[in-house]
Length: 204
Image 1 (cartoon, rainbow, N blue to C red):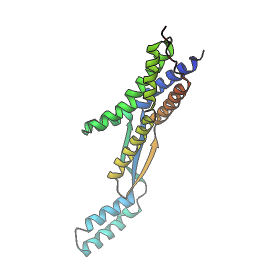
Image 2 (tube, rainbow, N blue to C red):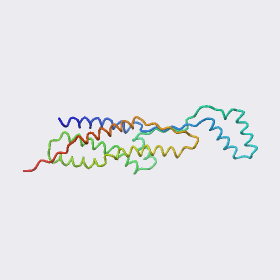
Image 3 (cartoon, one colour):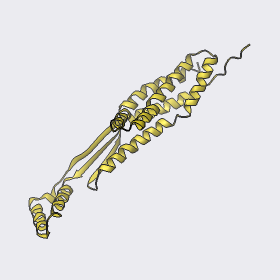
Image 4 (tube, rainbow, N blue to C red):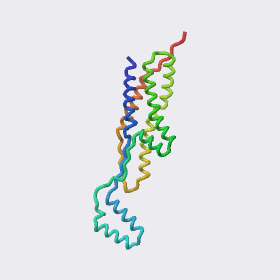
């Protein structure tokens, strides 16, 4: 049957959407080199004193081997999912942005998939036709959820960049949520492409 593939695609998309929303999308980590940290700290303290104070501090640093420290320390780490980002935005009183992210990345995709699933099981009639028109209308927003993911990644990266200095080396890693959400997008697109909107039955 022609509805088997879209039904499978819709069900898989729904299954992938849940971890895509709840699992981490991006993890940002910042590390500081110990020797650079020690050097910067000493220079900051020395700037408060005179030239002699600076010389004594630099000499003491060299004697203690602070300029030869090895290794790195963790200075920053943030992991966020789509749902976690919504909560963070709401907690920061960015209610409008939080609502928009939730609507376009969670509510609309879920409603669209459920309506498509219902459409596949309905007999051909006017209600099915109207539902198909509504689905087509929502399809115009099909790329917004992808755009939301890009915004979230940019938001987290920008938020981290605003807190980091030259000392900190940043490392970004995409989380499982990103790949689940990507899978959802692919299956949702496949479902939309495979569903044929039927014309309503002509009234006699």
